[in-house]
Image 1 (cartoon, rainbow, N blue to C red):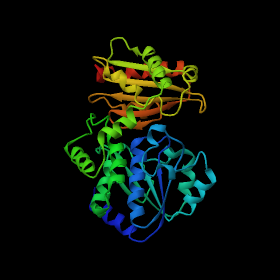
Image 2: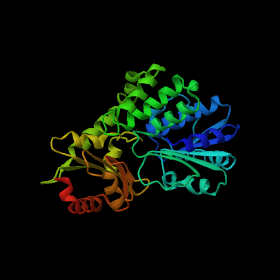
Image 3: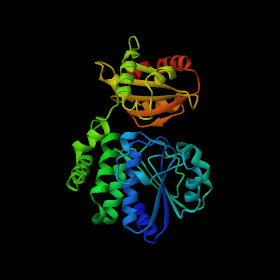
Length: 336
């Protein structure tokens, strides 16, 4: 974190303000954890803070301290719009393009107040006037920890620690991804010393599956296809299969990672048919140096990180599979 960001940040928050914090659409553990941790910190600084999420998120994240106060634009659009329009400072966390907040993007774009972006994804658009962007960081939660620790470390507490631990754990694949380094573990150690219970948080996130989710996982694994002569697999779920298992938001979280557990595979793709939006939601994971961030950006209007990315297709599921296979032909030398 650069000193000029920290000094500007401390100056901006030195005067009490009405603040809105916005995570990306379909917020995950890192987006919600960083937003809630920052809210708790700014609350302690006597600011008036609201979190406005573009939409809802999985049930397994709804235990996070302060979650019940989050305003969801998809459910309370007028209140959310009013909070943003009356804000004196806006934070964008865990996204680097206003397109990632979809329906909120134009509302935020039209505001004339200071905006601060904290994010760890590739290819930032720098929509804010103050930016802390570092694709080498494990998570936005680790970045928020850096900001809080450097600004006023005495305000770090158990609530903040639980939120930050959740985001770091989920965005590093339980500390397995290459972005996890010695500093990440030192941060996590400090969070545990503040009261974050790692085993309890892991259980709440990963060991709370419903019967329908496990059945959906079974169908997903049955649908797994290995590409001949390439270390690549893809998994599909149709809208009919989702209905059969009474799909709820968050049920498919982590399914794409199962492809990488197959010996010899270093690229896994998951395609999920979203009937409501009329799109195919795509998730990409890789091991080694193959950039799924570039793959997602070049072929499926997506982005993310070297080894973890997402994308979208507006074509049918069958046509998306064909498009995926054709795209692979341009990367054979990188994959084998």
